[in-house]
Image (cartoon, rainbow, N blue to C red):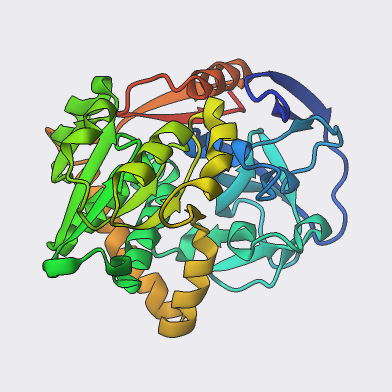
Amino acid sequence: MSTLECLVRRSALADTRLRSREDTPLADGQVRVGIDHFALTANNVTYANFGDSMGYWQFFPTGEEDWGLVPVWGFGRVLQSTHPGVAVGERLYGFFPMASQVVLQPDRLSPERFADGAAHRAELPAVYNQYLRCALDPLYRPDNEDVQVLLRPLYITSWLIDDFLADNDFFGAAEGGRATVLLSSASSKTAYGTAFQLARRGNVDVIGLTSAANRAFCESLGCYTRVLDYRELQSLGTQTPCVYVDFAGNGELREAIHTRFAELRYSMVIGNTHADERAAAGAARALPGPRATFFFAPAQIKKRTGEWGAEAFAQRLAAAWHGFAAHVTQAGAPWLQVQRHAGGEAAQALWQQLQRGQGDPRAGHVVSMGG
């Protein structure tokens, strides 16, 4: 057997190449997982853009200094096992490489999950090392795996952003009982998941900022109080207390917002889908107002599981997720239309498309490297 991998050049993210490796025998305590399908979205572009600073390149070492494997969220099935606690055929959900297979070293097993105990992942965030055993996963449903791989990890981030902002009383931006939150890249899946959650609170004005081409899509979702073309930023009052949630990483837009809004109370950085703006994003320290702060979802997970307990956290998240998944797939007006891609060359072409920021915001891309 062999493993097909889609490698990305770390110093030039638009460059990709396919590599086929012959599989080596498993060591004791390892499992080989066939990766059935995974999502490829702007979120994965963010992982690559922050690959060095946030450690994303470290999850799946390639043995080649300038080439990396971008992490993706997907479903797989155990093909081989030398671990007594994991059976061949078991279905798993978790963090995988852009590849057809991966070898894991299960550790800290429970009926619901296990961690990859490989030495190179020991210092990486625990949330990314967890593999959920679908048979007992409260978020799993076998009839909508495509929706899960596309939206589940993004929605969890959205849910945590909403929770974080509310947990901090919107940093004082809720004067008069209503908060104003500005979201860039409003057509992105993580942004509209956040807007969905914020809108459900009933006391938040959610302002979506997007390109002219994506404005109609954002307005059709119904979760934004108002949608503006980036060029219409000047239509908002400068004295409005507000929070900015940056999903785009566009340094020029961030500077405009920090400069325009005298009552900007908090500036949150989520992603960096505008790869050509990476250098500008680094200038945030010199901007007026609050310092732009990267949101690290695992920290909020740790806080809430400590306060609520792991079981209560899982129950709240599961209830919210199932409500969101039903909403975005509603008959007649779905927010999401699944598009499937098979094979390594298809994965390469899709990655390059995402790098250029192209595509229909309603489309959700699901890839199978095994063909």
